[in-house]
Image (tube, rainbow, N blue to C red; front, side, top):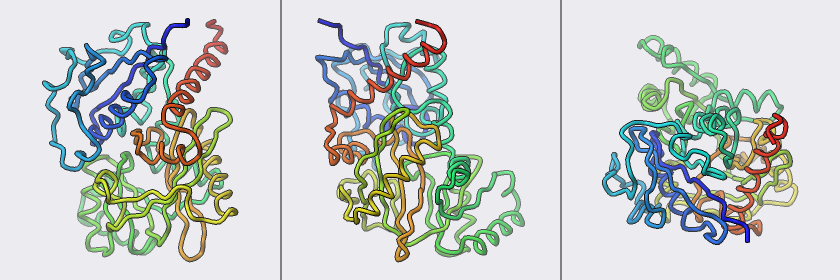
Length: 370
């Protein structure tokens, strides 16, 4: 009988999505088939310390649930984590050595989803689930992502980008507000260029509110992106695969709040996913094709979730953005779309681990390291 694969689950991290990551990891650890996998939980504290679980069976005992996310405390109580804390940050290779067969990075946001963690895993020689360094970095940076999507001929909504250094004086802010109002109009959405889960995002209906929205976004990044607001249906597709990606059925996100903000995403009952989406066959086919094209254009591998818009009433489809480490609970949109496509959560995990090992072997063979 073959031995179990040793799977490292890396979660937590220093970004504003720390608790989202904890919820994703909790769900994944509960769902991995223990007849196939030995689970090695590896936490990263808000301060950036690496923590290795001493007893994987007790991982996140009494931990965070999705329902608790909006009201969660600002700082974690690390004394409750069943882990042995290192005195300082350590290199992954020193934490796990050569003992992992594969890692699953579930660190959402900066310092995890942006290529930094993927680069560390590459250096440590550890196969890992999800996008590589390039796609992770590009997918996290909304400004670079929009440029590459547009350069690939994919439809994106109109947008403007600003650096913090371009908004340091009142005159500069007034000029930015004028440019936004004239080129994009109202309403518009203001976001940190790097970030996820709608953290730091504002919907602005009046130009007078733009300076405050710009400052709110700049609290999370040194650059900000402003996108034209459109009346639309919000459609999402999940994608898995390396050279030949597979695209799930599209799903539609509906909600009653002003926009799809952090609280709406993570408060039970505030949003609804309709999967498959109630759209005609031709539109469905076009959306799935665009999702696959965007995935390839950004050199993505492993997995991603593509967020898209159908403009009302024109029916024009826009690619909004890609999420290379989407929310990963069994009830998250990524998993629910695959469930609607006939792939259950446990089978989805098997597929993703298989894709990670396939990519690792291919690159190892190219390097002559057999």
